[in-house]
Amino acid sequence: MVRGGLDARVVWTKPSYGGLVGAALGYFAALTPSLLPRALPFMIVVTAIGVVAGYAAGSAIEWFARTIARLDAWYPNKKVTTVSLVVTWGLALAFTPIAVAWQKTQQEALNMPQAVPGSLALAVSAILLGAVLVLIGRCIRALTRLVGTLLGQIGPLHRWVEASRERIRWIRLAVSLVFVALLFAGLNAGFSWLTGVYNTTNSDASGQFASNLGVNSGSDASPLPWETLGREGRYYVSNTMSAASIAEITSRPAEQPIRLYVGMEQADSFDERAALAVEELDRVDAWSREYLVIFGVTGTGWVDPDAINALEVVTGGDVTTVATQYSAVPSWIGFIIDSQTTINQNRATIDAVVERWKQLPEDQRPTLVLFGESLGSMGTQGAWTADATPEEVTEDIKSIIWIGPPAESTLWKSWQADRTSGPAWDPVIGDGQITRVLVQTEDPDRDDDTRLPVIVFAAHANDPVVYWRPDLFYREADWTIPPHGPGVMSSLRWFPFITGFQVGMDLISGGAPPEVGHNYSADMAPAVVLGVANPEWTTRDTARLQEALPDFRYETG
Image (cartoon, rainbow, N blue to C red):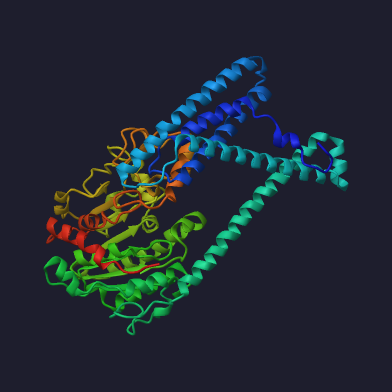
């Protein structure tokens, strides 16, 4: 150690034997398939992270064996280590073309064509990137040691350290903890900045026009100003399906649907927004309609055009839909920084609407429908506790549709774990009479089922949103155990840390076609039909609706 300089030994020390063996195993594990095929950059990054994770784990095991367990006598000689490294890395590298072939097979099966690197290019790129990441980690370690050493030469700290040189380690540990704290503070500042940017976008009404509002929120008849509905709210209330369009699809008479929306800027608290939602329902006499839909929006306040249009068509337009915004940030940011907000707002809205609904005579109550997609599904499930049964959940709300529920959603997580039978990706919940899980676009004969109450989950077996959880890094999930669901490679297996990172990268992969990953556009009509259970509906109606939905999509975002 040069006084006042970086310790070059920390940066350039020879790689450990255990670390290199672990790196080979990490390389192999990272090349195995996950839920979705990986684009070229993601494939290189995931493999490099596998190399780094394996190196770190192997180095830690070797350090423990030699330093704590005192197993030096069992440490292999140079000849053995050389041969074992050649064999380990030879097998890992020989696996590369197999992994590349798996990626191509997965792309073809899911209709997700992307560039796939050659085996040599992938191996070289991933190993080089992994080596660079290891060097960066060593440089950070050397820097914290340097700062700790310099601090130990200052005044009282110097005298404290001189009493016992071992105390310098405590200073270095403190420096490392400060570094981590600064890293998290920087991330928090970044998310705060992003939140401000999205809040500004939410307030910006440029390019939007208050047209075709009828009696919807934001109209002249509503006390809620159109300008403060939020960007997604303004799109939503301005694009209601017309009675004529609904009749054209169904070949039946239809009514004009009503859309209500409470923007997050229109009240400060969850309960105040929920109260505004009920006031809007009272204003339009939503209670006289056949159906009343409580719609759980995503992080930005987005309402899926296919979802709301399908709901309005299946109900024949005799429906009022109410949605309440709770944030303006994309769902992935909301999930990271404050997933409780969506739960609090949706619980407040559901409780307020149901309480008002119960005040009506039983024979004058509309059928309550609850719809939630993605983070909206997680938020609306939060209105109940994890020990609630399907019978308890449907006590008042007889029709519930949850699309692409995040893995941490209260009921999905609980019911999936406590399933009566079936695999994790297609669980039988309770006696199977109330709750249905749509893994793929349902067979037409299922659309004829008009039983109420009903809870419908649409959850693709290869949707990373539905299956990624933090504990996937250290605990094998049921869905990773064969047999796997539709669209999932039979060669998928769970590896500590690696699988959690792989599926985490799947979350941001994007580009999934219908019926793959988190794209539920092809499932919307079947899910809504099964969830609403309109007795007049036919399988032919479902086919016409699914075909018509793309024509009625409107601009959002």
